[in-house]
Structures are given as structure tokens and as C-alpha cells.
Amino acid sequence: MLTGDGPVRALAYPQLVGLPEIGDRVLLNVGALVMGLGTGGYALVVALPDRLPPDPVADGTTRDAGHLVKARYTPLQVIGLGVDEEASPHRAVMAAATSLDGMPVVTADLHSALPAILAGIRATRATAKVAYVMTDGGALPAWFSRTLDGLSGELAGTVTTGQAFGGDLEAGTVHTGLLAARHVLGADVTVVAQGPGNLGTGTAWGFSGVALGEAVNAIGTLGGRPVGSLRLSTGDGRARHHGVSHHSLTAYGKVALLPADLPVPDGLDPALLAALEPLTARHRLVPVPVGGLDEALRASPVPLSTMGRTLDEDHTYFLAAAAAGRHAAGLLAELAHEGDPVADR
Image 1 (cartoon, rainbow, N blue to C red):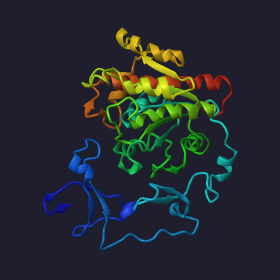
Image 2: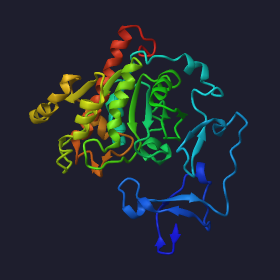
Image 3: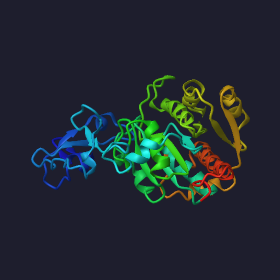
Image 4: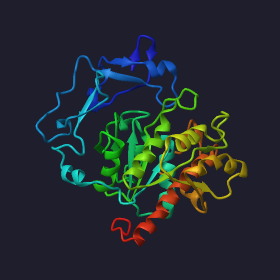
């Protein structure tokens, strides 16, 4: 986009503002651009003042015909069809859904863990159907994620929950999103994480990703099997994130009130293991063999990057996420042994 100060990178969501064309005047929000945010350092197109998009058709047949309002009471609030609304084709299924039937669900505090978790699942059970439940701690539009675009053929679907929107299915809560992943998308395994970007103040509690502890509670309450992807790093130069991130210690150690499996890659530095010891008061540390995981990570269909660091620059981070995926996939054998029809596919 060309401004009075010269050209800037700008991002438009056609579903909200219409499709910009060369020569259009645009109204921009440049807050993230001015701040130089690593994930979202773009100007955002708020409107095309001279060519507004058509009004949504409220005839009960389109996505916009629903009553689920997200980004509520902001100028660009989105009204979509909730997966469990009366007009939804999935209403009956969702009304009857009460349990996750033991489905393994991997929780992670950063969106960058998603492809690594998926790599671990695929390396262990290539045919597993995997869904993604996106929470609203980071980007609200799922359309912002290049990772999701690159994984479109690898996922059974995305459910956007809370204030997040733009997934294959819309849900008002993480609980509804989890049930939709299981009973509408038919997932064997689900991954729960916030969208790209996050909010953090450098304090123990001031990080949007601590909500993964609440996701653990939701998974356990609904009869799922929580699997926590630990945020481990040998490449992060910040003391609070080097080794075991303080966010993992807070989310799993203080926010999560129900037990979870916390996979740990075999061969982990003993000092890192010692730092995880406080979590064993409630959770189970599970050693996971890492054979083949490096190859699976390097074969990822999307680039692996966290806070600007690549796989080789923070191998431990991605390996821990892949180990969580491997463990979750391994749990499907237990479900199949118990006669679960989905896990036995």
C-alpha cells in the first residue's frame, strides 16, 4: 500500500473488507507496523471506503446467517454460524455430544508448536485424523496463519473458539470446539493452541498462553486425555524461557487443575528434567523415544520457526513438541484396545 510516507506492507481480509484492487483508497490501522511486531508487523486494511463489501445474506444458508458474534462490539465484529446453533447442520450431533471418548488432546502455548506436534503424530501414526482447536490468545482470524494454509491437506479441520474466527467450524468455547473436533470432524487426535502471535508482559501471569492450563481442565472434564507439550528451549536467550519456560511451569503447575501426561524427549539434559520435577505433583512425566522425529520435523510441509528461530537454532523446542505428538498418537493404541471405533481405523 502507498501512504504519504511511502509504501508499507498491508494485510487485508477479503471476507471482512472485500478484495482490494490497484488504485483503491484504503483505511489502515498501522499500530502493529509502527510497533514492529515480529509476528504481526503489518498495516491492516480496515475498510475500502469507496467500495464496501456486500451485506451478508441472512437467509439461513450461508456462513454469515448465524448468530455467533466474534470480535464482539468492535467495528469489524464477525457474525458466523456456530457449529452448535439451531441452524447448523451439526446441531443434532453437537446437542448429543457429551464426551471426547478418551481422545488424546495435545495442548501447547505457542502456535509455532502445531506443525511440530503434527510431525510427531504423523511419524507415529500416519493415518490419524488430526484437528486443530484454535483459541483466541493470539491472532483472532485463522486466515492470518500461513502455517494453517500450508497444513490444509494435513488437518481434518480447524475449529476457531472464543473470539477467534475463520476456521472450518466456529465455536463459542473451547469445550464446544473440542466436542466439534471429535464428533463433527471425526478427529482421532486434536491439538489446542492459540493463533499466531501472543500477548506477553514478561511476568509469570501476563501471558496469553497460560490459558492452555484451562484447556487441560476442559479436556479432562469432557473425558479426553490431556497431553501437554512442554515449552523447552536451548536457543532462547531470555533467562525466563531458557531450559523450561516459566510459562510451562505456570500453566501446567498452577492453572491446570486436572492431571495431564507431559511427554519428555529421551536424552533430555538432567538439569532440564530436574526443573520439571515440580510438575510431577499433579502430572505424569512420560519419556518418549525420539528416533525418527528429527527426520519428521525436517520433512514438515511448512517451515518451522518460533520467535524467529529455526529448527536447528532451537532444536529442543521442536523436538519436545514432536514428542508430545508421538505420545498422543501412541495413546490411540490404548483406545483401540478398549474398542473405540475411531481409534481402530
